[in-house]
Length: 515
Ligand code: 3NM
Ligand code: MG
Image 1: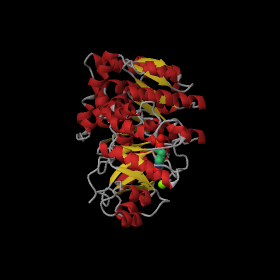
Image 2 (image 1 turned 60 degrees about the vertical axis):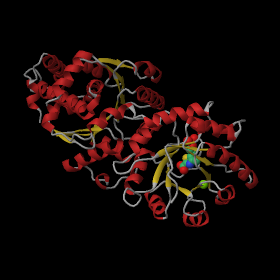
Image 3 (image 1 turned 120 degrees about the horizontal axis):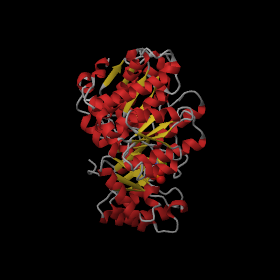
Image 4 (image 1 turned 30 degrees about the horizontal axis):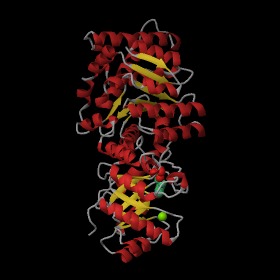
């Protein structure tokens, strides 16, 4: 039996000038230990064996002082020579059974895995832990096999939940203070969670490795801002009716708080979206300049990223803004407009999903299918049927929400909304919404406002925005003065306004139309 090990913050060393610079490896590791790393791997792909052994000995002295295990990357012989606690082996290194035979049952042996098959094999072979990666593209190791992200990591965790019950798991690749909370939150499956993260450059290359380690450790111990609320709601599966009953309260708070809706949106709908935000009691700002987000994210509102007219520069701006809102703990809505239409857009979806957390993803069937399939190759509902039936749509929305641990809204004749646990179908709305431009986009703006005031239950916030919008559309479309798409637009804005006004005065008869 290997000794109990704390995997929460695993330091992997790097002796290359790009990361270590002129500093002394042992001193940097000692600082990181003072900052709270719980496990150290000596990883050195260049030094000769004699130097490896002497450096490992020095490292072992400092890790022992901190009561932290020392593992050696790849080199079982070095681990044996210095009598440290174990090794980490990659897929191209010595095989697991041989390493175990050489090191014995008490050694800690970890294995790098990128696929379900590799993970299952390592579990069967008796690995103590799996280093699952690569999480994000990283300059530290460019010859990695696969960038698997949080979705791929979760797939592995799910697959080994049964036969890998006792194996510990960590994630590696591009993990730093700005990504660590999301990595832990989005990767973990309900049946199997990550035990920790492995970090190279964010600690080894830091000016102050002790502080860097301490900061990451504090983030590991704290749930991310977008999680605290939704965690409280995971238990209550709720029936739709009781949730609809809470909708007026959300709409009233939008009126009272007049929250900011920061739209990074396409050229076509800027004016329409701003008018709609005003009509429902919000305060719109249309700003596509990422640099402004660091100020705007502090104003208590939320961000909409609508990639309807994406450009290379636009994408960089979205990423900058997304990171700013995530860091501030303010909500973000993603509208992946035309997600599957071009290679550029498919890449934009991938880039954005890797760059940060979205509280809500809203799109039509094609867009949601693209978002679902963009990260890992999917089986099942996304197998290529030209359109999905309602059962398949509900399952897709639920699976995407569960994978991203957020809320997904799929619009269509029937809309589907899910947080991965609770999935609702809404059949309000009107055919005229399909005859005007930006009708989907402005829904994203409305949801950003309900989300800004109702993030404790993102599903409720999304539902409130959706019902407000689609019932207003129904009322507008059936007005006598509406003759077609042209007259529909101003009537829609009026009815959005009327619902917001009457609800704030305690009259929510309109909600009886909810279906
Ligand atoms: N192994 P940083 S990624 C050593 O995917 C290593 O197996 C990886 O460095 C894998 O924390 C990686 O600086 C480097 O991104 C991680
Ligand atoms: Mg290796």
